[in-house]
Amino acid sequence: MRCRVSVYALSVAILVLAVGLSGCGSKDKVKNENAPIPGRDKEIYEQASVKARKGRYDESRLLYNVVISTYPDSEYLPLAKLAIADSFYLEGGTSNLEQAIGGYKDFAQYFPTHPRICDVKHKIAHSLMRQMGAYNRDASKARQAEFQLKAALQSCQMSAFKPQIESDLKDVQQALGLHELDIARFYINNRQAYKAGESRLRDIIVQYPFFSYYDESLYLLGVTLIEQEQPEEASEYFTKLVRDYPNSEFSKKGRDYLEKLGKPLPTPSNNDPAPVRPGYMGKFGLILGNNGLDISRDGVLLSREGTEKDEVKGLAKPSDASGATGTRAIRASTRQNVDAPAVSQPAPAAAAQTPAQTTPAADNKSDSKDKKEKPPKKKKGILGIFK
Image (tube, rainbow, N blue to C red):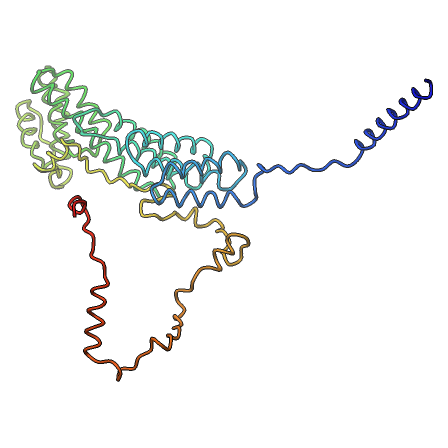
């Protein structure tokens, strides 16, 4: 009995020792199949750009997000963020433009010193300008666009985009000036609410100095002050009207008011022509919402013509298929050289026939045989079903 116990104990000890020794051996390294592959971020980014240029925006955004989430240290990460915003901008529509604004603002927050930052800020304003409607409707988008343009102009004084930003700011302020002037006319002409009209006209004169109806605003402000029994202040605006806009259609009316008030007529400071205003069809277009804004429909990196900007072209391109291995090499080997001349194959001897052996009768027979052998064409469309 004791012998059996000792043998059992010895076997258990040997088993424990064997397990312990096996645990002290070298551990096999487990390969992480989900680890990022070097250079893969570049390929995914270019695949996403191809889909975006083809108008497949949802698929492109999925691939751009793969670059952002999988390769946080990639040089393509800021470009992927910017390209996502561009895809929303190119797609258009109110909801997509709002998504583009959010994407551009996130880019400006995370990459404030990026070389494209002024273009991004300008594109935020363009996203708002594309949502502007008629001047006699809601002006909230126009006010937001004006705010963004002023902010971009302040931070991009040395940028190449400064002239375009200034031009867009004048266009937006023209639409806002028409909005305010339309309300002021309604208060003055329809409601005789001169105080309400005065506040609107003062906003125009202070905020929109390049407004094409600035002369009319000066005249109407002087009239509202006359109606409120403030002749001294009214004469100041009439004087400014006659001095700065001598050829305006309202200049004569301003001189008449100055003569009635007993004020001296000022000497004109210039001989500029009357302000250019839209005609009948132009006004009709403004009412329908055609503000005449020159807005680029291209993004910062992506364009509607299917081209990429210099920021992407400057980065390294993937290697050619001829130098690759695996699937790329197989695809490259199966390609045909279009530039190389085609090699003609020798025809079978039985099919060869000299011109002397051919006769017109044989040609006619062969032509008739070919015509008989051709099956009749099936008619397409709804009527072809019943044939």
